[in-house]
Length: 162
Image 1 (spheres, rainbow, N blue to C red):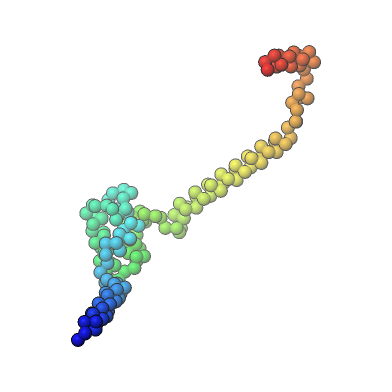
Image 2 (cartoon, rainbow, N blue to C red; image 1 turned 30 degrees about the horizontal axis):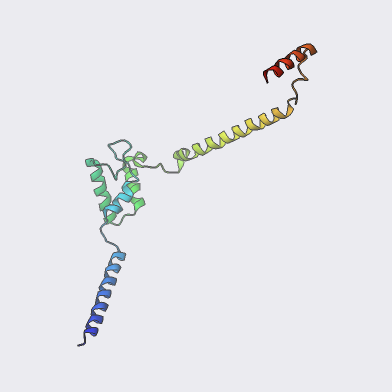
């Protein structure tokens, strides 16, 4: 056979093998990777260490939890199902971020409400200052009733300073 035909056949065979490998990867590995586990674990806190995300904690409890997450994902559980399982077992304290419903919605609403209230107060104070500034007399000399000789003496002293 011609070497060009063999080379073309090998090229076609390699491209088919590459396509098969890509298709196998797209189909997904039935067993979850560490990245899959850590994507969920970063949303959960360690049950032993305060304020430590599960994906970076090295305690035995966290290692067991990550193994359990991996098993649950391998069994076909969704991310929400896994998180709901841990919340049901240990309470909402295991969540890295409180859920935005019920009483915990205040965690999300109170800062926004405080900022809005602060802006209203600042706006009212500024409005009062503007209003107070508009009602003041333009010249304070009219309000002060000083004898003319005192005013003349003050003006002379000011001229001497400049």
